[in-house]
Length: 387
Image (cartoon, rainbow, N blue to C red; front, side, top):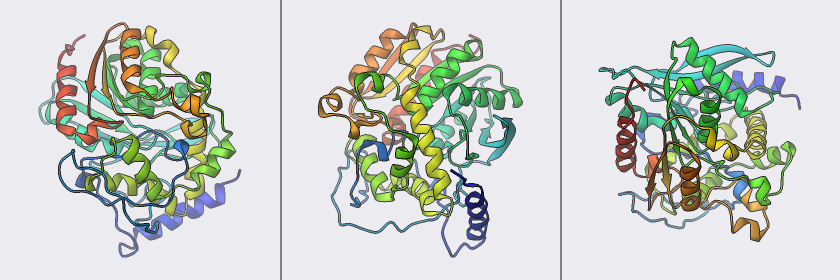
């Protein structure tokens, strides 16, 4: 599949769009406290073009069905050109698998440093920007915060050909941290970022001060449990159908336990905007390759090898499972049960602490930021800075 000409056209077109503010408006990440998530949008079932009205008010606000709408909205480039992040974005340039790449990241230094660095790893349907509220809370508490966009995601490179693996993404992240002089970090991963955080901690145990897993996927092996495989071409065809309405419906059901609020919407548009833009094909292709990586590279069998203190922050109403919509009914019934998965992970990980959020879903840091961040800061404080 050749995207070179399409990619060049996409970047040039995105630059033209970015230079014309009347064409589309960039969504400021700092304008919201909520986020999208790392569970697959197109992998959990066909979604009809039904929109959901945003409901104002507290986290307990319920969902409301609404009328069908079109897929209009902001248009972003293949590297999220036009979408604002909550802090300055820098680029780490490097070569991997013979290809020149760049990894976008934010490096936020606190006003009063406590000597610790937190590395935030986003999920499949997230970007570094969706850690907005967490970045601010950690920075206020004295942590240096580094939040990268992984290769294939958001503002980072989307290569035409790349052998994606969690090992490769961990190496990329480690190289970034080395370039910044970071040799000891608290690694915080959400959803797919949780799978990456586990792989990173297994590969670099002496440089991982503490591991924090926020509703990580990969706590079960979907392939072994009977979820059928999809080819990269099949994933690609599904990804090309991505719309804001499909993202919104999926996130409401899976990430937010049936709730919906206006502050979740910017993250829906962040994702959908790339699929409205001229780089739609290369975005969809990289997404397809990443789904294959997630499905074929389980980490659950190695949890017992994690040697560092590990904090599990688990929303109990999460039902995320890769490929659930293509699985037989008897398989769908037994996957994605986070109350069980969280407890099993805590039992398997030698130095684990489990915190459960009874009423929250896949993205507790966005659904109830106050409760989540208090639990996070308490859990981080339990580990001394000089461990």
